[in-house]
Image (cartoon, rainbow, N blue to C red):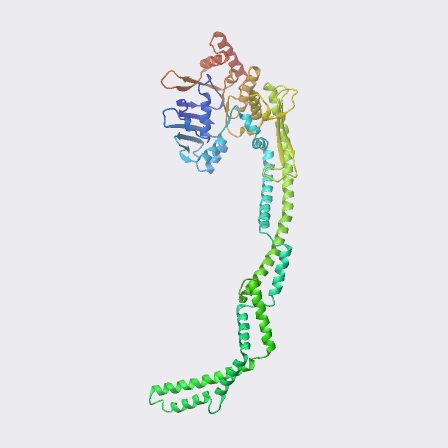
Length: 556
């Protein structure tokens, strides 16, 4: 509940303090006195857009403050606690608008405008003469329906099912963006693998192949060199190894005389051993060497084929094995891609079926809610001077519609304010007064109207009078029955229904215009109601005002 509103240097208001209580409060005064400025100030405190033009002339800033008393279970109190901004059951909002900037505080802590807006939605709802504009919006129509607890339950289930469907859909789309291989591409990969499989060698194996080829290509020269070397090593008397051994034996006898002789003898001994090992290696090489033209031709063909494949894949022949492994991985991934896609597609069918089922249940409870709301609003329209008026909120279910968080429903809001006139879209209803009253009827009939404890109505009773005005006053009483309602009004029939009444007075006689509010006692209130009835104060107008107040008190 709003308990205090303070305004400093805002529009034409220099300084104003408004203390409010629970129930229905009427704000009255002459046209242009500044009544709606109070609503504008409250709108800024709820996170509305700041306009430096609203700063009072010759002032550098405007300061606005609102204090709220919160109930223990209030949504606003929960928001404050979750945001770490709570101060018991008190909530103090402050906003300063200066040239080029705007700042806001909640319970003394600086906050962003979006935070102020979030909290403001939990505290106050402001309804102006253009309230019907909100009703035209599809989002507002859904909000009216889905405020019902039964709809909320089914809506949450629909959103849950939609979320799972959407997550799987996104995974499927992401998979499809990977451009899986077509059948022809798969065939090409398989052909390339079969082509490379028997030939692609590891770098080590390819090096061995090239070594053998070089050996065979120079076979006769190599063989001649091997034979000469073996002959030199194997000769009994003149062989290199035998000579080294004889020299080593000869020098060893004198090794004790000089270390250099001993070292020479040892080196020759090792040379003899190395010559023997060389002879053994030569024998092995001679045993392995194959100078057959057939083997050389076979190696020529293999190496030529490997170079051809290397050029085809733009890579060195020694790296063909890595190309083969990459191709195999692509084939494996392609098969896995297809398997995963089929799995996601099957899952998508199941998830879509579950979503459609939840959306259908939501449609059913919405239909019941829409039927009840349409009936209730239509009945209130009769009371508000629109006899024969009809309010229709129809729901069309489309099970083939693209899934959404709202379900598969399309809403159609139609209204007729006069008997015999078929219901038409709300935005085509011409009378502003009718639109205001329809909005008020929706407000009263819909439980969504209880979303914020403080309801503010800015001249929603414009264009009406007589018994209809009495009905509007009683409806505003009902809105405030379990909370707080503020109404800026020019109608005495509405003002008399209020629990308290403030009069806004503008004094333009001074050098600068002054605006003040006065909480009216019984006598002042009679005078203000009398003024609202006829403009002039007289015994007759006061008597009429007293009668209206007494009658309203009796009804209350």
